[in-house]
Length: 100
Image (cartoon, rainbow, N blue to C red; front, side):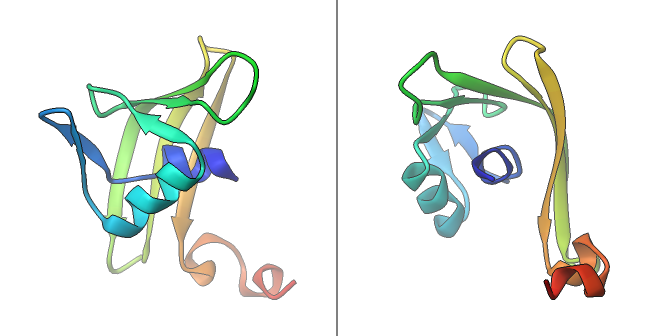
């Protein structure tokens, strides 16, 4: 779940400062994720072991009509890939599944 919050964000880094939605910044900080200088690489410090890194390869910005956004990320040094998405339940999954 924290990978979705970290990987599926519209935050960027401008002049060493994380810029964007205050709610997204608070969520990222509370989960222990940092945004790199490039604005694309995410580094996780929440685990006791080595840091987990998410590299964002494609970001589909939030679409107000569809009420969702998504990203394609790789985990670590190419260990795996994820497609992360967030938005209203009806936009992400079938309504029957969302009620459970």
